[in-house]
Structures are given as C-alpha cells and as structure tokens.
Image 1: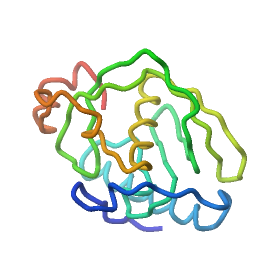
Image 2: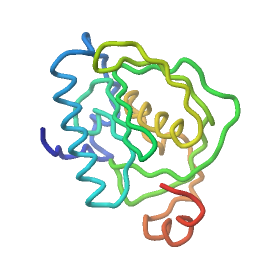
Image 3: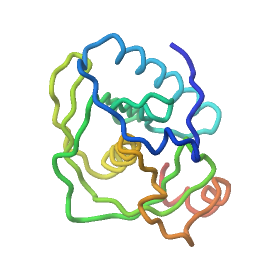
Image 4: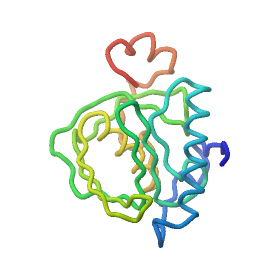
Length: 173
C-alpha cells in the first residue's frame, strides 16, 4: 500500500482507455485498490475534498474505480454502463488530475452500471444524483476522458477558492 503520484492533465496516460482485468479476484486488483485508497485519503487530507478515484489517475490503465463517500463505499472492477437516464442535470465538478479548477458539467441524472466485486461477483448498481455523477466522472477516466471533454460552460470555470466563495453553500462537493 502506498500513496501514488497522480497523473495530471497533459500526461498522455490520462487520455488512454483502460483495459479490463482478466480476473477480478486477482491479487493485482487488491494491490492497485489499496494504492488508490491510500492516494484518495492523502488527497482529501491535502486539498480537502475527493469522493472517488480511477486507476488511470495513478498511472494504471485498468478498469477499476473506488468511490468512498459518507453514504457509500463502492469498488467497481471492470465496470460498464448498462443504461443512462434521459433526464440530465448540470453541476460543478473538479478533478484530482487538475485540482483547483471547477466547472459546470451536464450529465444524465441516473445510470445503471454492471461491474464485478473483489470476490468476482457481478453487481448491478442503479445510481441517481450525486452517486450517479461520481460514477460517470470516474468512468470517463477509464475511457480516456476528463470532465473538460464534456463541453462545460466555459464561463462557469473557476478556481477552488472562487467556487467555495460563491457556490459551496448551494452545492456539496
């Protein structure tokens, strides 16, 4: 287990699609997950926020996501979308790979994702609201995208300081 340096915007690794694990129960998955957990915890301590992380953000081009919020703790191995809602919502997002920048991003309100657990069992997650947005954000990383690729309103871009000053009372991050 280790805190791993994050891949930042501009590094070509961030733009490459991740490949699935041949075996979701392999020790490699657990090792990478431990590094992701340590890195997420470290980032929270350093910058004060963070709800999820994808393996490509630590330089591992594998389909693995960790989501850790007060409401849920999810590990998604080899996740894939099964369904997106037609209704959409626009909210502010930021990213560990280019911290300090926030912008309004339009996304579906709900998604259904199929993924494996660490025990190799298939799970189906129907997510709405904040969890849906986190899953979509992290899935983007698995496909070589970042939220800036979602055509955010460029006039909404702001620093963390401005975001907290203007919007933190209206939204949680």
